[in-house]
Length: 137
Image (cartoon, rainbow, N blue to C red; front, side):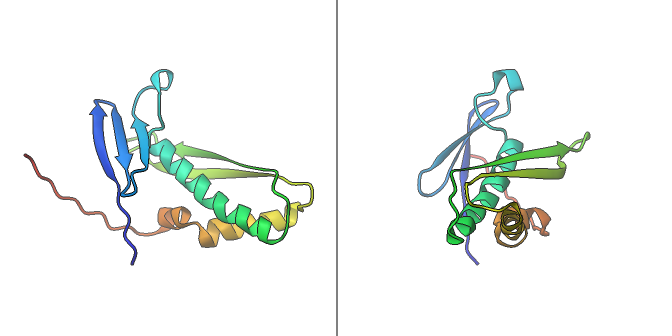
């Protein structure tokens, strides 16, 4: 079982920074839309899903020797009205710009990517055990 970790540190009341062991930094904020400087945690979940599904789809199309001029995924999530405001459903719209790819083969590749290879999608449908501990200093 491979482990991953990040450290999230508060920068201000509504601003956080997440850093992985390699030193890659992601800015996070919880401001209202008009004051936003970074993605919220829920935005990042959509970004993680879209980017995870994209990687394998692009690689599979290239393996089929198709030209990938551009690739876009628009990810939209609907959230529960209560607290917590979790996603009730997520829709991904995959757009491939390619002079030689067929929509049918692209649809098969996307299905494989999302349903079989994307770890984020699999995590969203899995039963995950959470634990926590607290310390003060």
